[in-house]
Image (cartoon, rainbow, N blue to C red; front, side, top):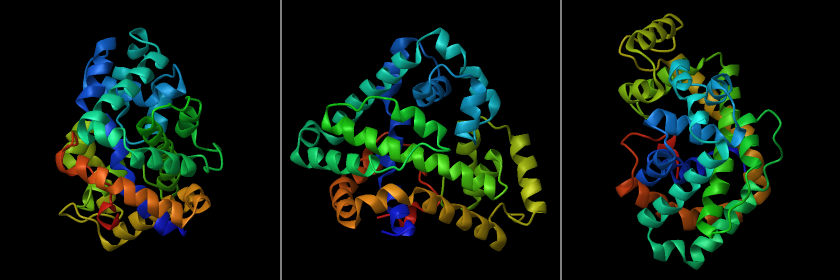
Amino acid sequence: MDSAAAGRAARALDLLHSFTYFAPEVHSELGELGLEGAAMKYVASRVAPMGKVGPGVATATFYNFAPRLIEAALPAAWEIATPSEVYEARVRGVDAAMTRWLGADVIASPEMAEAAELAATVARSIPGVDGRALFAGYTDQPWPEAPHLVFWHALTLLREYRGDGHVAALQGAGLSGLDALVTHTASRIGFSAEFAKANRGWTTDEWDEAETALRAGGLINRAGELTGDGFEVRELVEDLTDDLAVGPWAAAGEETVERLLDLAVPWRDTLADGGPLPGRMFGPRFGDAR
């Protein structure tokens, strides 16, 4: 399996991880701990596997969030609950959300058990933690026992492994976290600029300043769209991201990956059609995913 095919597989399955951040059940479990606000819940629950880290570590690993948003969440979250308590609450919420959105029959099905085994096979083929700080935190978490949570955990490992490589690719291309967001939205395939600013904590002035610099650099035009050079830079970033993440998919093999996609894509579509995600939440290449 080449890197382009592996990238398509990863993008095809990504929603089955990313729904986690929007599921009411997850927000409710985190709220029961005392965490308040979507930003604190997101930041604390995603970074919890790394331990009781401060805002600097979260800002570095998340990459495209405004530092002020993360500083408002950490270390305040750790004064409310421990990282292990936060992570356990997240898993409980995922359990409830998957059961509600996919249905108890799917959760208990032989197909889910098979998908869990296949996804775990891919995730266990990840070659190591070198340079993958956020992924490394998740490798320290125990594997769940329930098949649907094994499935989710495996996809989460793959997602964070790929994400760490994506950050490296963005840095190699000379794109800051904010630059990455602006060029992502300029592709007109990902989420909107307004959603990105609100969700990642950037002000309009900061966004406009980044757009001005990217325009001067020839990456976006006056309409806020990618130029030819901008499109080329984003393509190079995505290609390198695929290259840096191909290892586990290639090791698992095409037959394993194709069977996993056959099983899981209908569940992804169920979440896309009626699940908790807001509109326009897919990555720059979701359109070429299965």
